[in-house]
Image: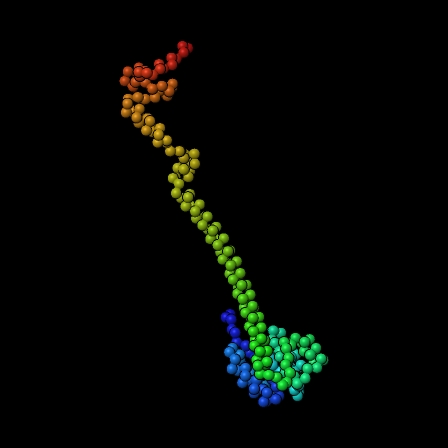
Length: 233
């Protein structure tokens, strides 16, 4: 759902001259879609069918007054703001309007600049609340997607571990896979060089006593101790 800054405004006043002035004034505003009606009962029926963000209504009208219009708005959309136009501001009317959650009211005769500021503030509030709801929804969607991605990541990591284990198993020689004890460590390169040098010099190692001897004559090499004699049985 994309964010839409457009505000749906409904203006209701049985004074057609005032209605025309307000319609011309706010239709020129950016991101304001204005509907103007002079019949309050017709306006109430429209409120039931169409969602409005901001409703401007005259308080004193035949058939249905501004309080009735406000109740209809609140029943249709609790998030909508209502501004009441009144020729007088009695304490009783003010308290009832506050109880119904009216955003503000303005008295006749009003200044155009004052009215414009009032509606500008109301529109700003509507957009901020809408943006807040939109961002919360986006965060909620991203959180759900993140949880799904984390779950998918866990599955893929499990598959990767299994594939790595199978690859390591397949890389072992057949003998080692069948008999792990068949695995032998590699010979020490230094020992290999030592025995190769001794072989080149014609010497071997007597594994029984660990002493080098002359391979040809069997005599001890010069400077070497004599081999240990076996004890008589």
